Length: 147
Image 1 (tube, rainbow, N blue to C red):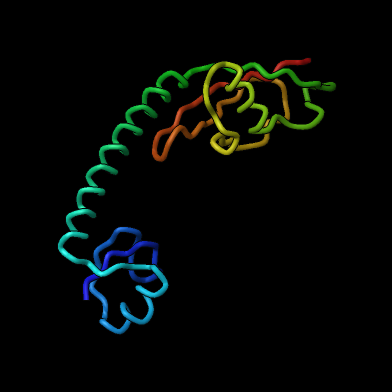
Image 2 (cartoon, one colour):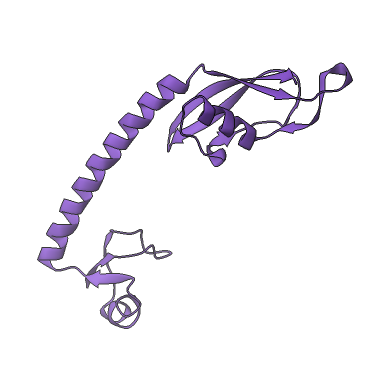
């Protein structure tokens, strides 16, 4: 029996996949748990149409993300922090601090999208990666100055 998966099923497929399974597995497990639906001609056509629409939306989103990444690349963000002797900070500069500085600069960035390779514990300039979208990254320079 051919079914279209409504949810990810381990060792079977991901959402929207058209898979062939045993009749009993489909009737007794997948369909009652709403993990899949029977693949009729109309549902297959509808599924293909929805896939095409989703692909078009994905392309638009990636194009917009690339434009944002181009604007974001090379941006310099200044963060003021208290530091002791030998330019060592009292604490660290976190991804949340960097995200807030980018929001003030006019970019819509979530703290989870800011990737810091090593903790920033000293004054100076550091490169930081920002994930704009899946597969689209930008690099921002973070300058930490004495408050």
